[in-house]
Image 1 (cartoon, helix red, strand yellow):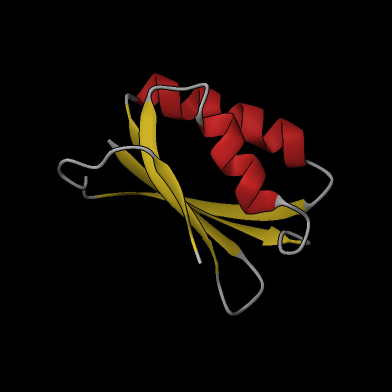
Image 2 (cartoon, rainbow, N blue to C red; image 1 turned 45 degrees about the vertical axis):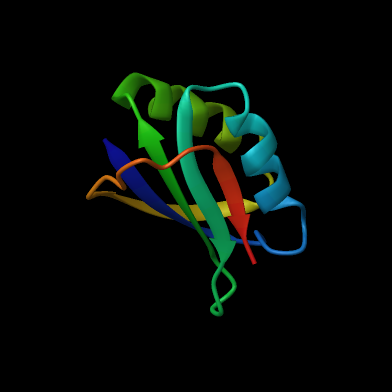
Length: 88
């Protein structure tokens, strides 16, 4: 499965993307994270549902002081994706 999550709050300029990538290294998933022009951060995580859930729980815990809200939706998987990258 692949989940897209958009985080809002004070999520840019606080190391959010770097933290998302670092936390992802501990999980069996792939994906990407990027800043959006409206000040939010968009994250895509692909893998087993339970792995994505655990990853997002850890990420929320690490960045709880910066996240005000989030929206999530399941999106189509990306074939042959490897690793977790920051999109600049």
